[in-house]
Amino acid sequence: MPFVNIRITKDGVTAEQKQKLITGVTDLLVEVLDKNPATTFVIIDEVETDNWGIGGESVTEIRKR
Image (cartoon, rainbow, N blue to C red):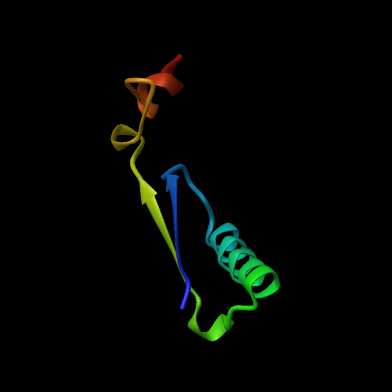
């Protein structure tokens, strides 16, 4: 029973793009690990850019440049 958690910054990712991620990750686990898609869980967490840091700075601050 695979569980995959994808975390992305919250910047307007569409429902269609999220569906493609869910389908693609599920298909990859089926293909590579022979997992059952019915018991494969994919969760997408969207994180505010204020709450995502890289190199000691928030993504919000980095994107202001």
